[in-house]
Amino acid sequence: MESKYSAVTAFHEAGHAVVAMVFDRPVLRISVLPSRQFLGTCHFQKGVFRPTADWLEQEILISLGGLTAEARHSGVYAWEGAGRDLRYVRRLAIQRAGERQAERLERRMIAKVENILADEEIWRAVELIAAELLRLGTISGRAARHLFEQCCDER
Image (cartoon, rainbow, N blue to C red; front, side, top):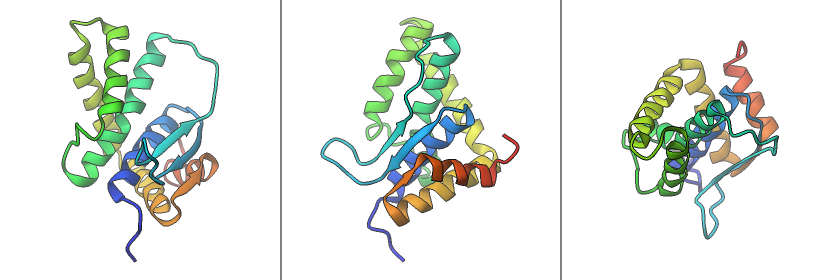
């Protein structure tokens, strides 16, 4: 059955969510319902903001999770389509590593996300969440967490 939603968008948003869950960042809702601004969204629960070096690095990894999952699914890095994510990543990378080292940090973080998503259990969680998004359009963070835990129960 063909979904009326974009598989590429579903994998993108599932990638953000799964990388967030790897770092225990609570996901509120994931959607592939297009709006004027976005093809899809991944919303996180509000928490205490502590811009530590670790927090910045995790935020970069989560932000790159969409682009990287989409690339693993499609075989192509859609740099232009992920422009908003990449602009955010650049701001964080400059904050973390300085202007001169930001691009190098970004490349290292992409490699790190590729490595995270190369784990079979984690990739299976991305696939399950993407499939559910294609079926329903929007899923709750609780439903996403349940799918993640089905695949990654020791995490």
